[in-house]
Length: 400
Image (cartoon, rainbow, N blue to C red; front, side):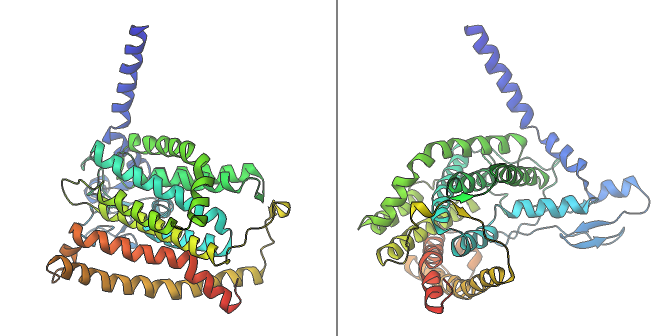
């Protein structure tokens, strides 16, 4: 028995080392048509077409630029050539499914146009998934795949540790949550929903390997970790959501809890985007939860009767699409100035309060005393606006 367990452990260890091998990431990139410029020049006398800086077509002798640049650190990615444009754009889209632009677009759209009940519960799970994922990264401290042999096509998250992949975690948790929470509430073929969730998850996971940001092991662990978190948190969602909506002092507890989770979990040895991203997620979650509470207490969040469910998906008409786009437009007109104003106010204010020089904004934002208040307050207000101010405006304008 003990020998069998030792053999199983040894086999698991070998599998882990194999999946962590950066050569496998580099092989996948080459399979998908990603090359270094020198490799292309050695391959043919006439340099093949490629993509530099994400869009520009390159020829031999032309300067090749890095695809992405980290605005917080100034770090630039490697030069590379793309031989398969379709895969490049597909995986670029896949990796964006785990970035801020997607979150700040998808969650509001779902809340404003589809189902706020499902939306706010998915956000609860998303907050815990991202928070636990980021904290686990800082505990394990496993580096990302080295370059060479891997080509770093993206550098924004390069300062963070690698395992688990939080892109893989969110790419697993969000679509699975949408399906599980909408079952019995919406009428649709379950097979189609499951196919969408699996496709979403696979696209995000493969995109992180394609970009050279994660090993296969990072992605596999991220998927499994997200599933474990879902198993634990989904049964508690009713209790958490009801507490957020109905308990008189829930906003005070929500804000205190989210602040404490952030402040006491950041033990970084060096600066990385992890701290700011985690504070941003926690702030967004607190804002959405507080906005849900205020909206519920004021009677602006009526829940449909159980007899009216399951809902049928309405036919896609010009009027339906027009109303959805109008809500999104009005919402963005409200949200974008709020986000810009909060950013403009909180960074200088935090610098002044904590005595940090504000002449170099990039350097100031890397300070914990500036980064945490800026992220918490800015995205807390954005989350509150998504859940309360914008829907209230819809009600006043007759766009509900």
